[in-house]
Amino acid sequence: MRTTDAFLNAHLIDSYLFYIGGRLWPISIRDQMLRGQLIVDRAIEQGLIHIASPLAIVGAGAAGVTAALRAADRGVPVTLFERDRLFSRHAQCQTRMVHPTQYDWLVGHWDAGAFPWPGTPGMPLEWPRPHWASSLAREWEIQFIRQYPRLQGLLTMRLPADVIVPPTPPAAAFNAAGNRNPILVDWTDLQTGQVRQDPFGIVVLAMGFGEEKTYLAPPSPYRGFEFWATDPFSLPNLGCPNNPPRVLISGGGDGALQDFLRVTTRCETAVELWKNLPATALAAVADLRDAEDQALRAFAWGPGYDSHFDHATLERLHREHDRVATALLAYPRVEAALQRLIRTDFHSVTLVHSCTHLSQGYGLNHVLVLLVAKYLQATNPACRHIFTSGMALSAIQCLHPPPISPADCNGKPHNVDVRPQPTCARPANPNNLPPGNLLGTFDVLILRHGIEPTPLRANKGNGAALPPLRQLLPYHLPS
Image 1: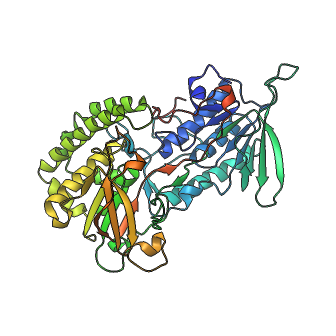
Image 2 (image 1 turned 180 degrees about the horizontal axis):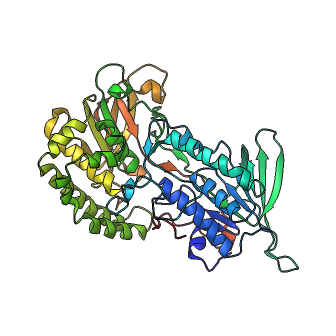
Image 3 (image 1 turned 90 degrees about the vertical axis):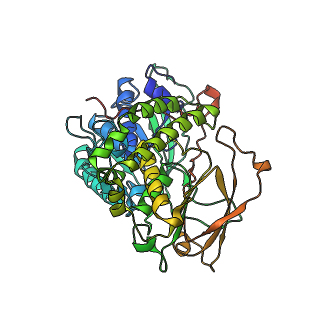
């Protein structure tokens, strides 16, 4: 079911079935909200959903709820299916501050601190200021409850419910009258056990991320705190009962870099850390915006897997970030500012990542991590060797008795082995990996190894492909 709309075609994975979930990049909360509104507006314009052709949405996170509210507000009957609760992923996290615009860094509105920001069109959900994730979920629940009575005749909630994916396509695309036949969604009410089948014009999958990989393959039993879990890292000594801990962070993406800044600084957000630097030093980033733009455009059209193309792009950008961090540290009063901002309740921090550069991510995180690392390397003898590049964890040995869980392991000793990795341009052969060697003993382990994506079983018979993993999205939507 191809359309004349490029946005719809990019997210079409089967007849009548669209995907806007966690396998797409970029995947910030703001990006999810943009996809939720865009998919509805474009589907209405293409005549795929209307008063007689209802919409089904699977997943009630930022994208799914945005889409549901937008559809109902535009007069389209919509049913929202969710296994858990509204905004469940964010609702469970009380210790991670989320900022709506900080990662638009170097663009004029990056420090607006609200989405939408003044002068831009409204959204079904508003993000009025930086929030703790759980607080943002509560704020959005209140906004949803306020809007629900007005939309109740058009918006149906199925919660908790389990939906069979993919849904059942119609036997024929059109009936004898020339009207499009509906797609059939089979679902189970998880409270009553009742099984039902309902017809819809299209189905939008807004399921979030799959299982986060905070572990190594067996036999290692260790599991770390998930990114969206409530963790102890903001507590004194990172929640460790004894001495300041030796910290290991594994991963080169934004999750690992965010946690590096949380562990090493007193700032709740990257924008807070940046704005505490002397204003005169910010001239060091004057020409970085061009490098960021070049890399973003190249990466968005990369092949979507480890390749020489990506490696060269990210290596060049990494050199630019490192140059800027070095220049920043040389400015007067920057060291004094960092001295006030750096935590003193950890012994050391080690960042293990598998290539010579950090992974694709937000420039603000990259520059600040490199800046903080350079400061620590110069001032803390225990942090002389922060970056363990070109390596991957091969084994974790818990040196403490059971139980073994994220909370029970935190603050207790673990031996960590690493082994060399080829660059991301040459993926490792799992049958030809060198043996691991002991890197050291660590008390706090944070593993940010990406996501095991939720499997999607699309019908391959019609030639439809899974959506592209990488996109360029607008900062806001036109009215």
